[in-house]
Amino acid sequence: MFSRLRSSRSSLVIAGLLVIGVLAAAAVLLPRLITDGSVKTGGGATYTEAVAGTWQRINPIYADLNEVDSDLSSLVFSGLVKLGTDGSLQPDLADLPDVSDAGKTYTFHLKHGLTWQDGVALTSQDVSFTIAKVVDPDFKGDPAMAQAWQDVTVETPDGETVVMHLKQASAPFLARSATLGILPEHLLKGLSAAALFEAPFNSAPVGSGPYRLTSVDAHQAKLIANAASSRGRPGIDNVVLKFYTDYPSALRALTVGEVQGLMVEDPLSDAQLADIGRLKGVKVDQPQLTAEVVLYLNNDQSAYFADERVRRAISLALDRQAIVDQTMQGLATGSSSPIAPGTWSYASEYDSTSPDLATARQLLDDAGWKLQPTTGILVKEGAEFRFTIRTDDDPVRMAIAGAVSQQLDQIGIKATVASTTFSVLRRDFLSQRKYDAAIAVWDEGTDPDPYFGWHSSQMGTAGLNLANFADVVADTLIAQGRTSNDIETRKDDYRQFQEVWNELEPSVVIAYPRYTYIHTDQLKGYQSGPLFDPASRFTDIVHWKLQG
Image: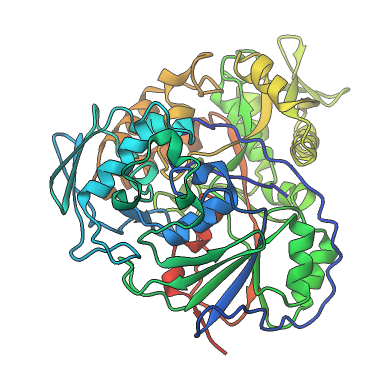
């Protein structure tokens, strides 16, 4: 349904609004028993998974450029810290850092005895080397990654200590940047940043992650468990990723038993989902993404959306589950929260998903909008409540806009849907704030910090606060949440931010899409937490096992 939805681990929210294409799944899935599907790589249990696409550079500093590279890099490499299944920070190569200088200095202590997969000791010099390559002017990876590291000064007082100085406190820095996979200096020291982009290392990488790459070609990548991983020895001895040209091909491979698992990002028909459900020996998970579908409301439109009572009424009028079922095949979590459900900072008590038409009508009446009995349309000071919902020409988002329009009609609001290309929508309407309402997708990335999307400093054409929302209390909570490194303080700030959101409804969050992850029921230990990107399905892979 929402395909190829990714969020850059290196960026803040530079990508901001994501273009999410909808590709037709052409394969007809027939029920059959999934067989072993394994590829022998050196003894022990083997888990084989299909992926759509192929590898280009298995290197963490380029992983954001290609989804398969991101999958492989997450298995082969480790960062200073990692994200748990709920997005919370966990130790990896280092323990969680000591924080000083009012949140501007992070001191990481590497774990004792770390080694690369070739047996060479991993030290603090490898960390500084990796960051130096990212900030080099000739870096050819994601510019957002380089930008995130530009103002960070790195010191290595000894082989097991890394000190990072930021120009200003930034709690999101750890989740968005310090999770970057570290490269081995001893193998790459003589290469310039430009040369590294085309280096043979990218096809025969040596990392420190839970799996070591043993071979890769146009058809598959074979990996074997790394007993010396800082995360502990994985429970599955071998992992094989098989490459297919597209999802229909990968789905066919799954149904004939060539593979044991597949993360499906493209839409599946109801019949295909039913067929998958009848397969024996299979479990279907539907991991939720952290990107949200939003009905943006231009708060500068005083005729309509400057009044929070109107914005709240629109939110209360929507039956989110009906929208999800009608337009997204049920593959989404209906939600009104700007913080993704299932993540560490989410507060369920402020997530209202059931429609309340009576309260919606009362709020509109209080705001001066009266129902004209002959037309059934709300009127205020002689003007009817009519506005345009803009979106791009993606079929799913167009369908969502249409469903929203239909539901608003029952409370006397007439909304017309207008679509165009995403580039035109962004350039001519969203960036210029020349719109009434718009359906788009927003992703905060790997940290819940809502600064770029909702802080008042980001209003205007230079920022990404597309709704031009401004509130002093919200600003204060956002500022506190992004500067404090105390997890409980941040939780409380974001809990209060969700409470403010629930009261002021700057825009209307509709849902968080889901993917379909089909895998053998012999796979145990997989935790279906929220996905920050497809590769984050491997977050807890060291705990996976094959049983039965």
